[in-house]
Image (cartoon, rainbow, N blue to C red; front, top):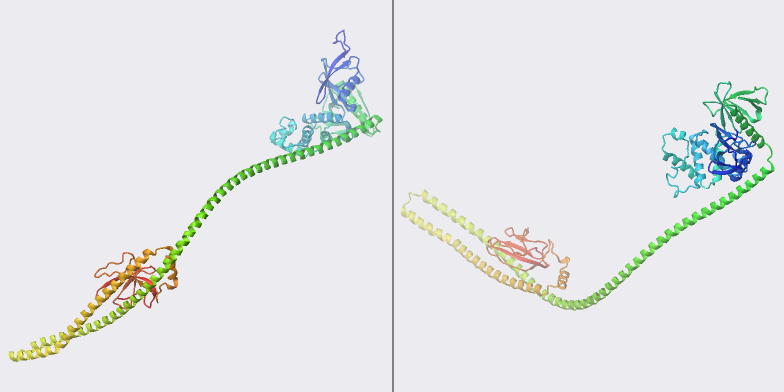
Length: 638
């Protein structure tokens, strides 16, 4: 290429623009500089010493071309631009990255270039390997995973996987990000340079790693195969398959490579194998293929030689630098760990401080409540003390009242004892009257039976008299009259004694009845007076002490039973010819009595019992009774 496009008044320098994988730099280049001078300038600006892997690439007539180092820059087919644009790229790839790459900048530039080739699908990669490589790329970019910082979705702006892999599975972008994040979380503690080296170690095992493909043919007008050149040798591929080569020539198996215009010839060392001849589309392509083959073959031979002193020094410096960085990384990791622990301790202390403050606040509130409670308790204690004093005064008064009541109870007990004695006397009189009444009743029954017999005899005699009058009509009236008078006289003589006895007996019965009624009225009068005395005592001594003493006096062992009940007559009323009962206690129970002609009604388990008496004379008496002492009978019969 001529330089006629430049002005006659040529300047001594011209501008160039160098684009790396992560940066752009503009430099001034002198007109007479060769490609080697410009390349060294760029390497010095980057701080790169491993220059044999890289080169400056430009585009000429639609074809990527490498800048030749032994030829001047302006004498090459560089584009007519201002500034002239060059791409600083890896030209040759190492076989073993961990052994051949020394500097970190070299490793970083290779990492960026290989990563771009994988994402652009220039290097075929499986989905599993793509996810793993993406996780190392994230580790190199973001450092250790921190869930507090790296929230879900933080990888949404990063290009991490090839489009082919994304389209191969029916998975959303969030699902792929979750998979990458899961691997990324396991790389904790790996430094950036180590993550990039791990990325390159995986990538160098891929089939298309470091491969440059050129369309060739074995005939002049056909282009049906591909020629691949990499660090291991020369490979022949079909156009449909860039992974599995049809034929390979390793560098140690090749004797010579030569070209003539579009024809290129590969001569193997083994004479048994024929030379491989092929044709390219252009003469420039053959030059480029030859240039790449020479460079890769030189690197192949250099790796198998002893390193030069300069390379050894560089490697030693790189080892020292890596050791220093490793120690620095360990120190930083330790400091980071200590800082994290300190932060955790700080958080624990803050949480503990907050907890203590909360506990202190609760304690203050509890103290205030305790003070309020103490004041309230003091007030209650004062009130309780006053109440105790009042209770003491009430106790003294109650004690005095108790003594007064005890004296009253003693007096009442004496009066009650006297009243019980009177009632017992009245009971004995009542029992005596009852016995007498029963005896008289029996006598009345006997007399009634005799009277009934006399009446029957009289009726029989009258029947005989009527019969005699009907049978003797022939007897004369006189004789009949005489006979009748005589018979009548004899009848009267016979009848007078029984009739006289009956009249006499009736008079005696009436007299006894009147005596009984008189005695009953006297007894009722006495019982009424006794009732009034009992009511007076009940009104005067109706106090808890008297009641408790009364309950103690009439204890459960003195309660009535079926064989021997305790009764005291009280609230007695006599009803003649009336069916009324006591207004205080209704009649609820009917019990049998020894006399079949007498019945009584009572209310068991009540302090006052109302009883109904009846006898053969047709009189009814209703009385009330109270338990006082043991007797043989359940009731008193009148």
